[in-house]
Image (tube, rainbow, N blue to C red; front, side, top):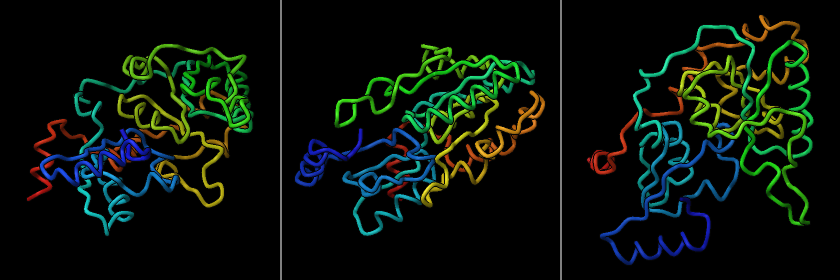
Length: 258
């Protein structure tokens, strides 16, 4: 849940008049590669905000330093239920690649298809898990905001099932939170983001990962693709953004009050 609509604003008013209650919001995405570019998302309208990690705590504290809101280093609620030691990196260098893009408009789709073309020419087998808005969401003029993908192998299984199985040789994503999901489940990942650093917007992902958008057209072999992977860098990114915590809410709230 978030604080963006009139409904949530009413929750905040209600809890203000009922001091024994709290309107609690849990973070549900990594925004744009960790950076909150959308202005309405920055300014909290809740009593407690449970973030994924200290990276987000610092960011939201900065935006809301004059507000009476409790911003908690909570962790990702799905990750908190799992023991990451149960997952392991696959050391094999196979030929299957899973693409996990965010919702892509027509311009971004052009870059996406170019990447698919290059990888196929290197004899990789490409699979795509499209964003739920792809081919569905309409623009104001009733046209598709994110056109349907064509000419690619689409997979229908859930992202979490695909990543837990760890059957793909490489997972490629953009500024989507799926990149963090892939790393959490110890998949080898690459970061491909045509929109990073556009109009001054830089993702936190790019502080740790090489953006292969600037490199992929010069790739000539599978070996070159694998040389771009850095497990050390992707682990540092995960540690920077995600707190591996607990879903016991009372534990967090009591800790913050001390």
